[in-house]
Length: 217
Image (cartoon, rainbow, N blue to C red; front, side, top):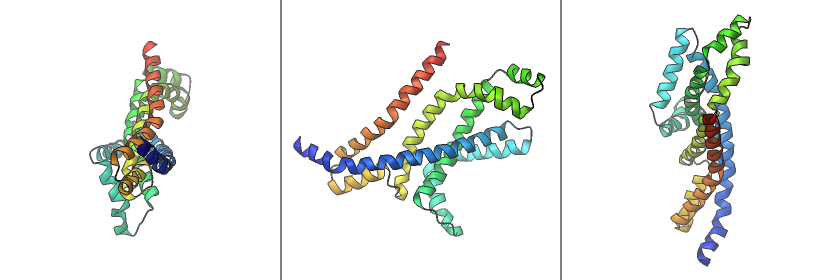
């Protein structure tokens, strides 16, 4: 027992420092995902067929290929064109691209779930399409998509672990490094699990509460 406590005292602070990188990476990737997701959603719902095709290709391309492959293409593959990104930037871009495709489907489903009569009523009052979307449709859609979007955030936090493959010093990278030094894999990775649980469980509870509240209405 004392040996385990010594291990925790020695390595837990080191592994825990990766949590700040995990959170930073998640925040940056989420901002990119939301921006790309909204643009892709509006393109999917646009009257212009070309925009719908481009948006569909982007979504299907991202969803049909592994995120790890996309990360390697951006970090290693782009060097063939003289573009060398630092690990954090490459991971942020990759997670933003991946998240944008999935966020677009969440946003689109939320917008389409709003009664079409709401939009027609807004148009009959003289609102332009962008104004009706901003003032009437999007606020209602935001309430609808909040539970699935919270689950999406949890998935994004877990997906940041992919960044260890390009040496971003987040939780998993530091856990792997500490495990290599201590030869105590179970104990070290248990520490990583505690950190992920501490970050994700509150969000998971929040998502479940939102789903129950929505179901009770």
